[in-house]
Length: 244
Image (tube, rainbow, N blue to C red; front, side, top):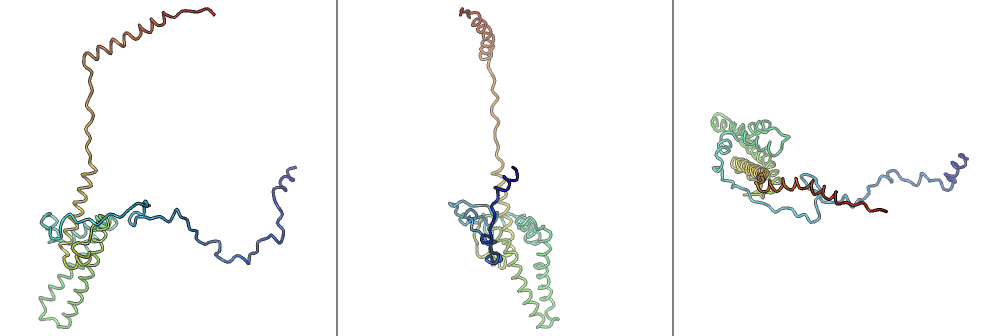
């Protein structure tokens, strides 16, 4: 009986119904499928799904100007005498995976090292071959522009993070022409946004006032509690037995 039921569950496949392997081309069954649920807009930074009515925020102005270095004397002094340290702090704030000392050393070698080489070349220009001086100057000029582009990329990431506009010009041009002022402005911008975030996150809530009962309420509560058993007892005594 079991064999009959087991045999009835299957259908014998005839020879003409067998699939022909030659009709299937390699990779035919591995074609991509278009899923409408996956064709959605996502944020480029966090890759979260955006609603259909989402509109990107408008470009916001910087909280301080490019020449507002005096508004934060501490960052101004650091950017003037140790720009590599200020650059390292800015990079670490934007890219947490890059330690500040690594960016600081890179800036010190490229920018401060180039300035020292330019000063030595100008000081001993009379003892150096003119063609060698020209080659050194061209190399320093090229290295300066490359450093401006490199530091401008971090400024661009800062603009994307806080939706800031290009001010006063392109991010790379700002660092190529006003490198020290740009470092101080970026540090002030992150500092201002950090203070705004802390102010919005720290909300103070006052506890509710302590409620106390006055003497009259206490008397009324005690009298009601004492009268409750007597009233229940009286209701119990008023019961009568009715014969069925």
